[in-house]
Length: 282
Ligand code: AMP
Image (cartoon, rainbow, N blue to C red; front, side, top):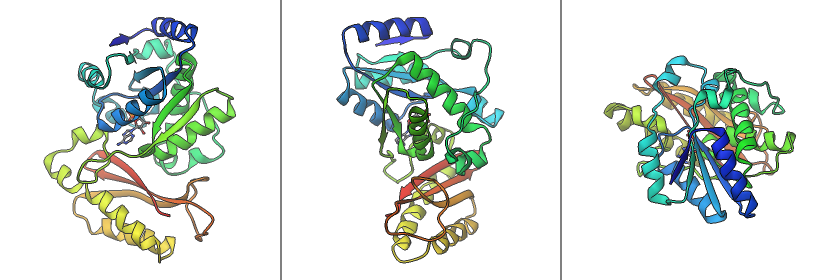
């Protein structure tokens, strides 16, 4: 297992891999790894000769200084966990300076409107930060395939748009949401949930599942109002948004059409911990 903290070093390793004409699968993460991340890594291992995992808490995609400060940083544990999957994984865990070279600012991107919906509305500048880091990492790693979780479905769509618009030669592969046995979508932020929050957090996925059932027979508006009502009655969890959206545009749906694919997207606060999830509805 090799851990690189410097761009120049990982670029050298990439050069050697490319010289042997081996394929690179890339999994970008912010660390505090869990089984959800590992499911992406396993898929990358299956489909590529070499796998690179980046671990970098990207400051410019956080809209809250407190959230950034509290984000778990567990590099040693992450490396041990990756080692249990394969000893051949290369880890790139750079410093902020190695990536941004003293200029820690986001570039501005247009993702044809995808960036203005949901997470874009509630986390200002978030997708400029995501676009900036992912484009930079792609330039450094030059992967053949890159793996992103449907857990962050809007991010996955935005990355597909990013590589399309900028002609970046990488295939983007979306991976299913990996859940705890109780249905809670795995997230690095789950580590911060106290026992009371851990107890109630599975309510999110339970509600999404019921919403999916209702969506078979009821309008998007009715289902949306029902979900909002469920959370209004909840003593602990606080709903930020629930939206039923067309997966292509991510715009909230007014009138259902049989030819379109929809997902329900949700953001919920458990205290100051923000949890997101989503579910395919049809
Ligand atoms: P993060 O470290 O939160 O930036 O996540 C890194 C990658 O892992 C992103 O592509 C996420 O969508 C993905 N990911 C995080 N949690 C899960 C999960 N529970 N299931 C599948 N993918 C996930």
